[in-house]
Amino acid sequence: MSRGESSPTGRSRLVWFRSINISLARYVIQGLETIQRIGAFTLIALGTTITKWNVARHVVRPLIREQIARAGVRLLPIVGFLGLALGFVIVGQTVALLSRVGATNLTGTLMVSAVVRELGPLVAALIVLARVGTATVIELGTARAMGEVEALEALGIDPIHYLVVPRLIGMTLSIFMLTVYIIIVTLVSGFGFSFLQSVSLISSDYFQQIAAALRWTDFVFLGLKSVAYGTLTSLIICYHGLAQPIRLEEVSEATTRTVAQCVIACVAIDALFILVYLLV
Image 1 (tube, rainbow, N blue to C red):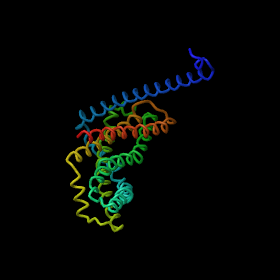
Image 2: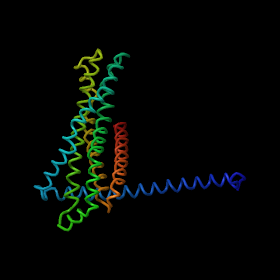
Image 3: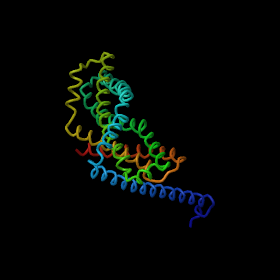
Image 4: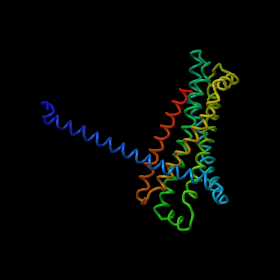
């Protein structure tokens, strides 16, 4: 052993590195266990959705419509406002800057890359998570803590079919529809703001450039990304609300944990699709 390692400073550094490694290993193991449990819950939820699609339709279908109204229709005003803000900040300023440097021919490519591929799906998913996802965790966690889930099982009602499937389908469809809505609002309002800045780009050229920059894969990947965001976030939300016993005082902690994991899942999905865009 060297003199530096035998000294008190060397031993303290060794203890510090060991504690860091132990903490990292603990976090990795906990993360893998969480992924495994969420994966098992996902398989159960998807299996229930497929096998019981026509079971109790008069009960489940209204619940799906209620979730679409809750996570989609009611969020249209705030999504429209954010679309206007993104149009001003991203599209309007970008078009104005490109006009100053004489590179307006790049407008379509930049708008498709920034708004259609990235910002639209991600912003829609985060809005649904913030406005509906947190409330859903509290709602389901409180129901689990109060014994309502066990009461459903005692009545012969599948909690997954009654509580998870409507939220899974409703949130997924809502995120997809809000994604399309916010993209349209952002692109249209962005050109409006750039027009107010006297940018030498007429509307026909602007939308023709966007149409020319779009490929058929953009439509496919946009739908797949929106569905992936909606499916994974809704399953994580329902998992933390229902899949494990919880007390009332633990609901807030479960909500915080849900938001963090949903954000990580959305970033991971986005990174995966970036790789796919580069390979295609």
